[in-house]
Image 1 (cartoon, rainbow, N blue to C red):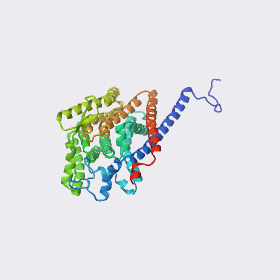
Image 2 (cartoon, helix red, strand yellow):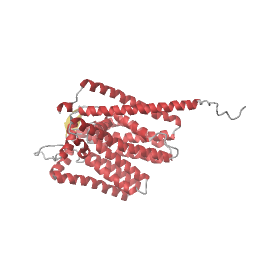
Image 3 (cartoon, rainbow, N blue to C red):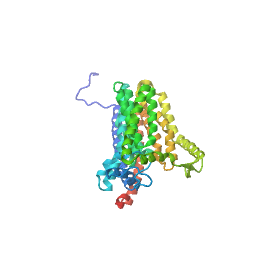
Length: 427
């Protein structure tokens, strides 16, 4: 009577335990479905790249390297392999040149593009989870969940999808930018190895700019952060590493292709005309212009568009950081760094979009660091809130998987109807 229950008597699970078991099973299902949806989206991106004629143009510089052609040429000296991009980007896709047919070459390039973005994002997610663990109890969200959430969001957002899934300069350039961010944050967390990590960050930032010159703006953002957090000497060392890496790459290509051709390639982006817009609140180009008034008009229009699309996200992240307590200060500093980088790269992003040849991928100069800031702030809020907030994270994961699944189903239907791809037919 009233004593310890007999060991042979089965104990009933409480309602809370049952709900917890069901909740855990639902989480596993959401993660499994989200992973499957992402894998389907990645496979469809390969099919899309096979059906996109520009894929062959973007892989041409890598094949030009292996066949001894110049990457940069003077106007009177064909062939003209590429214009406006840095010489390091073809090196990033060299593994594709081992293939002798379009399908395996594009498949390798598509996998590389995904890896160039997702590997450094995975490192940043793991660092975020480690910072949250250091603040007290274990992290409520495993870093792999954060990585999967980012991957699905990147598939759904046009600018991020472009840089992660298309064969283009953006994947290696922005991947190096993300790795430089990781190195700067590691320098912040590890005082003993700080100088080494700052050297790595400078080299990565320089190599990123050697892929795509407008990412030199990111190096400025990193310099501001490093000088503010670690002092002017650390900032000088960072700049030396950045300039050194950038100079070495360009010294190699100058010896290979000649100074005149490389110099022309560096000057060309600045000489491109800007789009003119039909109305101040419209983004439909009506032509191009070199006039300063038209350029200002385009900048103002794009600023308003950026504020309309991304301002609410930036404001929400900033508000969240102001309300979070100091127990997760390292994670909050991660989000703050990415907000600083978002602000620094705003005008270069607008200039890249506003110039002739600009496209949605140039918006990733803003959307990528902003997405990372939002992801870190979201994980920090889940960590500091009550356990009842945890389903919110899996709800967001399920919602992202649903959105990507709908777009993937449409793309799959389109692919199944078309049959053969453009590059396969051309071959």
